[in-house]
Length: 264
Image 1 (cartoon, rainbow, N blue to C red):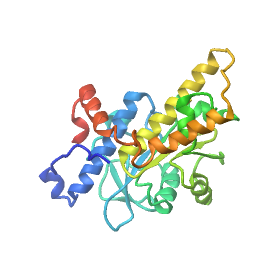
Image 2: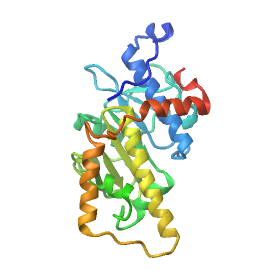
Image 3: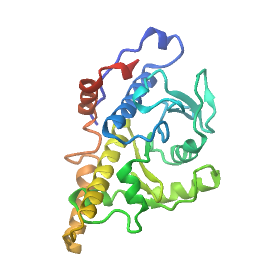
Image 4: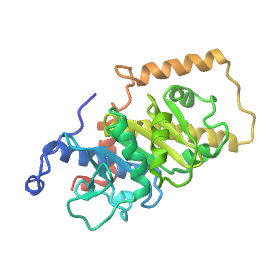
């Protein structure tokens, strides 16, 4: 995986005990929030992107509840423990519903160093459809091998749901939360973000195609499976478009769009 853009640790952050590794993680996570705003995936201040803080403690970074995604900065992110308790000082609180889902996955799935969860327009629309993601486009087929489903149990406020979320994710990196939204995981912020880009684009193409009213072009089972298998190879570790390699370019896009304020 290509390294993210390097950033020096400001003295003000060093004095508060934030390591260079955590500060870089904060920069990447803040960038993911800002990019989500650019791509139109936000739901005011609802939904969450979270990341595990490097080190032996079960500490995680989360957005402050009350800030819009395009306001998030590296220093404004809240650090919480595995129970969602805020560590340190902040003028904001967390959304308890959000961390019910995130904490379960972070604690049970070692590769889930970052989790991206959205209530986006197109992702939620597909999550509402009985058949889910249709095997009707290249974009859909190439993510299908990475995709699972979790049935809606109401707003995520009950810890009893956590084992079922983890089981439904399994070894996959994308989870359609039926009647709710989308969720992706990655070993880095870049991986989780790009998985979300790929599933959200597939959902958008499906909704656009169905909205046109014309009959969809059918694909043979052989073609479907060939495309799914290709997706598993090309997006996986060592694949020629390994998910997450796009992250440095996405950071450049963000800075062209709105500068470097996310690093503050």
